[in-house]
Amino acid sequence: MDVTRTEVKSRGAAKASRGSAARLGLMAVPVAFFGVFFAYPVAAIVARGLKVDGGWRFGRIAEVLGDSAIRHVLWFTTWQALVSTALTLLIALPGAYVFARFDFRGKRTLRAVVTVPFVLPTVVVGTAFLALVGRGGLLDELWGVRLDTTVWAILLAHVFFNYAVVVRTVGGLWAQLDPRQEEAARMLGASSLKAWRKVTLPALAPAVAAAALMVFLFTFTSFGVVQILGGPTFSTLEVEIYRQTSEIFDLSTAAVLTLVQFAAVGAVLAVHAWTVRRRETALRLVNPSVTARRPRGAGQWALLAGVLATVVLLLVLPLAVLVERSFHAPGFAYYKELTADDSGIFLVAPIEAVRNSLEYAVTATAIAVVVGGLAAAALTRRDAGPLGRVARGFDALLMLPLGVSAVTVGFGFLIALDEPPLDLRASWILVPLAQALVGVPFVVRTMLPVLRAVDARLREAAAVLGASPWRVWREVDLPMVRRALLIAAGFAFAVSLGEFGATVFIARPDHPTLPVAVARLLGHPGDLNYGQAMALSTILMVVCAVALLVLEGMLPQSRSSTGGTPVDRTGEF
Image 1: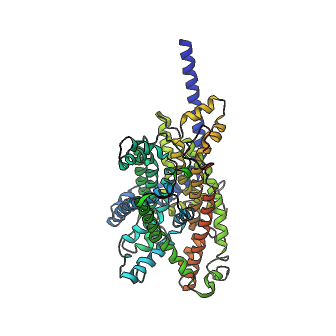
Image 2: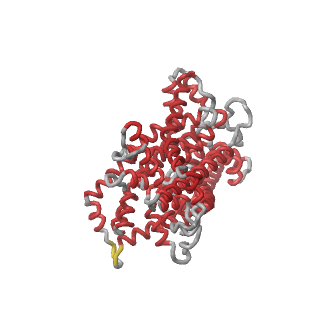
Image 3: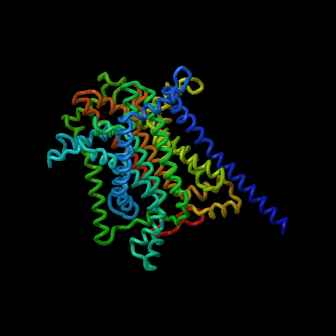
């Protein structure tokens, strides 16, 4: 008996050792990617600002933080991000439920439309809302109401921009939750609200927390929206870093503010990890196509109508303003001018930005899916001890690009990646690398809740039957997470299309992206330049909508029309 126990312990230790080695191996590529293309460039720009004549000027930190104007910027940045996150969750969670549980005509098209605002350059979002709520805008003309002098314009623009984050992140998991678990609770006497609060909400908590985290980080580093709608009254850390870097040329102050961002983002990620760590449990996942049904009763139809009204007023109306302004000139003049290369603003015709953006976005998506997929697979297991702490630190590292100034990352690329063996400043790959940095967190946060929801006994059973780790992933995990993988790829593609903060510094003049081209046109006065900017923005919206519609068509469908069949041992529906 003692020999048997010793053998069992030995085999268990060997298995645990192999699992730990495999997990560390999965982490290797993401760690190297973030170390070379994120930590190194950011460290280089911080060192350039705080290191003078070989010595560090740490006293500069106290000087900058002692400035009352800087403290006001820090306070506004924090509270507007908290309010924006809460408002986005309040408005978007009903939409996540409707897209996850209801089946209605035009659902796929509307889901793509909802995602379009997320890829728009922030300068375009700010301009669209200024046309709605500013002087001479729609609200001013109809009711004499102006919001451009208040913080509400910024908050509503943030909801417009981040609505899709909540709908797709939370709705992606919600659509796969087995509704029969909540129905069983109601059959045992629980009210609908109590059943949802006790059964569904705990299962959704990781996805809700992930969405809230991403929204907070995006609004905490808001740049273009605040730059246009905030004016001289409101300024975020991102706006202040840009001002100190590009207008005042004070790299030391910009470096201090970058360190403040690091500290704030690190604290947020630590709180997120502490609150979510024990909430993720094995869930009963089903095919999303069998959980959605037509609304029943007046209450559900009213909820659907309310969500549709919100989408039209908050998301579609600003987009419609952009489209309408792109057709102000007769005979499609603004669109025709996009094919000319004699404006003096670009080295090539502006229409070339469409092809450039698509090429960059496809490459960035491939990088983000590979790096993010490996990272999510490495984080699937929740270990205690040193390895568990390493994994939690690794998880926090993956989210840092969402909370660090894109201006800092862009300048860091120019400063750090200009010498062999990393002399990439003249290479086209620099742009998709920067875009992939922002796409990886979306891949991880979308795939991880679903991966952790897979019952570990399925993997163990496949391993006992002789399957290799690769085959276990291919036969067990991949079929269950393929929907999440496609959603993650769609997010990465959308983020790459609309990334502006870092790309504006590293995109070559003869290879501009759509957001960079729009920003350059908006920066030059004249109706023709403004109209071309609106035309390019419209093209960007159409390209995104088509890409997302194609993605929606690729999502797995039910193999039968019968009721909600749970995932079986092989992961097939």
